[in-house]
Length: 207
Image 1 (tube, one colour):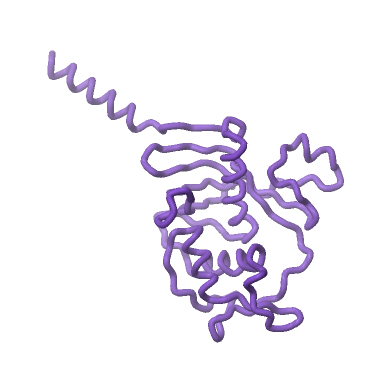
Image 2 (tube, one colour):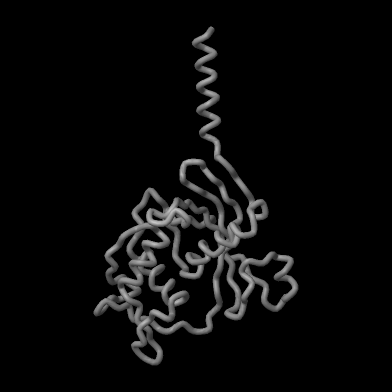
């Protein structure tokens, strides 16, 4: 009998510790945390990277796509002015962006879309195309240094400036309501170099 009780007790503990340490919907998160996560995931939405999962090696194409686009959008002050219509993104800037947001050290190379010459990716300067941004919809703390959830990706006009807003707030300006274009399952962990930051390890579009 004692062995049976001990077995049941241990089984209950295993079940208890297997449960997520905490799960929250968007509006159960604090405003500051919600904004931090929205900003983090928006980096991937605006770079327009495709799905990848942890049990497959992330292709170099994804890393370079992210690194080039991230620098074009967010670090324009560090671009090289190659021509009136073209900018140069530094190889080391692409590698730094990948490490910061994916936690991976890479040696950036040419890809099908972006050719690397003289340590620069030469690409057309950004135009007035629409913007993409993300909002966290579900956030699950798995209790083992891993967080999972869902992020909604929206598309809006180039002049849109309220990515942290609510659908009710957006409806006040019916001429420019963001369109929900995708939902992604994600997995993140802590950055290997900064305990206050996350890095993305899985990003899988829901069909």
